[in-house]
Amino acid sequence: MRNDGRIPRPTIKRLSLYVRELESMLSRGAQTVSSRQLGDVLGLTDAQVRKDLAHFGQFGHPGVGYHIGELTEQLRRILGTDQQWPAVVVGAGNIGRAVINYARLPEKGFSVMAVFDRDPEVIGTEIGGHTVRPMSELAEQVRANGARIGMLAAPAEAAQDVAEAMIAAGVRGILNFAPVRLTVPPQVAIHSVDLTVSLERLAFEITLGIDQANRRDDRIE
Amino acid sequence: MRNDGRIPRPTIKRLSLYVRELESMLSRGAQTVSSRQLGDVLGLTDAQVRKDLAHFGQFGHPGVGYHIGELTEQLRRILGTDQQWPAVVVGAGNIGRAVINYARLPEKGFSVMAVFDRDPEVIGTEIGGHTVRPMSELAEQVRANGARIGMLAAPAEAAQDVAEAMIAAGVRGILNFAPVRLTVPPQVAIHSVDLTVSLERLAFEITLGIDQANRRDDRIE
DNA sequence: CGTTGTGAAATGATTCACAGCT
DNA sequence: AGCTGTGAATCATTTCACAACG
Image 1: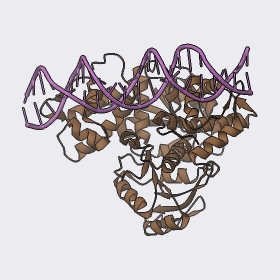
Image 2: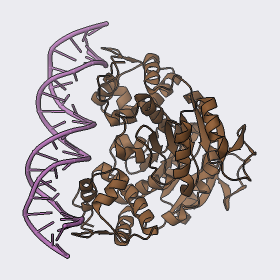
Image 3: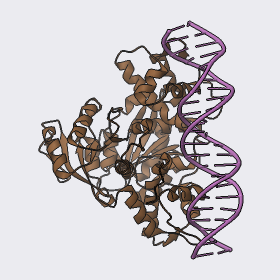
Image 4: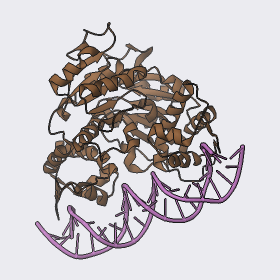
């Protein structure tokens, strides 16, 4: 990987979109793709696609384009999703259950190793093949499974405490579904999925008339 | 609203984060907040907070800061979430059920009016107070309820068809949970929530060591 | 005082445009 | 011919820095 320093944040955001699209092309039997073609379907310019990919190495073949299989493999290696990422889930409510049952996760490199909840009524029940455990077993399970990712599906009030427990247990990154801002040390990565934030942006863009709000690429994510 | 033309996209993205934080401050009894304080908790500079808000009017009081109640109200009006947004949900699987049962939605201005699924086994069952309807009733229900938003929780293979059905029925914006890129006309707003994309970004940032990947503001969303 | 609102400067990202490879 | 990789130019966003205000 020729990583000459700074990778622009927007490039990082697009990386998994490339992989998703390439996989879809691959499954449709395509062999090669040009930066132009890939850009067209993702709403990006060809130059942008080339710049993005060039941050990580020289994967293209002048006159030909990119070999899809090869590029996908490289990008997966760069993203780290060629390895398996064991994860724990805290919160066995609606969102937690949806996440646990999300079948596509393992094939993308993420595997739920254990599920936790605070509620004694829920502890001991089965969800998607996992017995829900009490929070007291979190640290032990994170260690035993080498989990680096925690998915936080607890209610907003508990979210900060859960985050701290996850971090203390050794989790390195948190996918946060609770609609609150978490305060975490800088070595811990955080991404939040907040349904109401997404809906509010959508509502605003509908109000705006979209025309100006829509630059093609962030309609995608 | 003094909307002198172009509102930068990053500003739009931050708008609902401001509202969320202001509401939390309000509920803790605070009266006023300075751009500095608000920026600190959100990981933004004070100048950025002021620039963002200044796009929409002059809400601040020099020497004092912003009156939280007043500012929240203004921002909600700007986002359009002072009104109610009727919505329909297509797909009564794990994600659909989680969305439908998400209690906080109505208080944020979004109300699920009807739920649809393709599967005859599921049609007719009750979820969160809604009887699941067949897709054939989509257009009629969208019209009857004045739904402008559609939440798309169908499987990937069906997503493009569902999106087209929603749009034909009159939906103006789609919140897409399916892990595919949707092709829609430019008047339709789209936001996607893709679990695997979020996890891949998280994995990449953990691999990177975060240090460089983390600029404070997008840890939040 | 402390804090806003805002031009001007600095930084960051995208697009242009083309040399060079196949 | 077709396409990549990349410096240079453009465009967008953020930060600086300060006058004006309560």
